[in-house]
Structure formats: C-alpha cells, structure tokens
Image 1 (cartoon, rainbow, N blue to C red):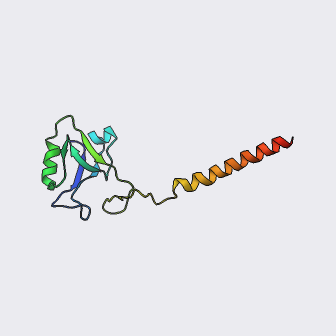
Image 2 (cartoon, rainbow, N blue to C red):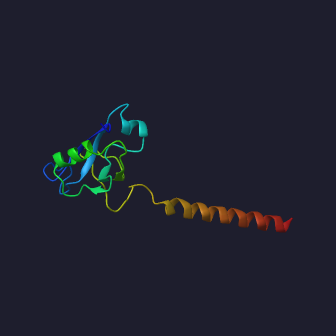
Length: 124
C-alpha cells in the first residue's frame, strides 16, 4: 500500500458539511512515512490527476489501491492542528499576533536608535 489511511467521502463525512478525503494516519515505515511530505490531517484533492470530489469512501479507497507504483497526490495542507476531527480555517488566521504587530514597533525602534546615534555623532 501507500502507507496511510484515509477517512471521509460522500457517505462518511469526517468533517461536517465536507465530503472530502483526509489522511487519518501515516503508517510507520510505509511509503508515505518514508517520503515525509504527507501529513495526518491533509486533505487529498486528487490522485494521479483524478479529482476526489464527490466520491464515496469505498470508491476513493479503490482509487488509491489502483494508483500504481508512481503516485501523484494533490493535497491541501491543514492550517493548524485541532482536537477532534480535522478541520481547516478558510481565512488562514493563525490566532497569534499579526507579523506587522511585531515588525512595525521593531522597525520604529531601530529607526529611532539610528537617529539618536547620528545626532549624538554630530555633536562630537
């Protein structure tokens, strides 16, 4: 196999109002684990160019079983780990401080320090 388990489908929604296929588990020492790019919680959008939208779970499983030796996956990375069923936040908000909240005051402080240094050097 490919070394991972999937959940989801039109008949077994893993996330409310979302029939997408998700990676539920990466098997130790399996192909996906050794490759290192796929992560638990990733949404699989396509296999070898075949869209997984609106598939029943068993049809998605069959598609993976018949994928062959060279498998190309199109995935959507989960944005942040959550407890319970995996979900994703459409707005991409990390919940932390915005980068500008750190950079703007830091830049202002650096400019002020340079200005003070230049003023001090002029007086010497």
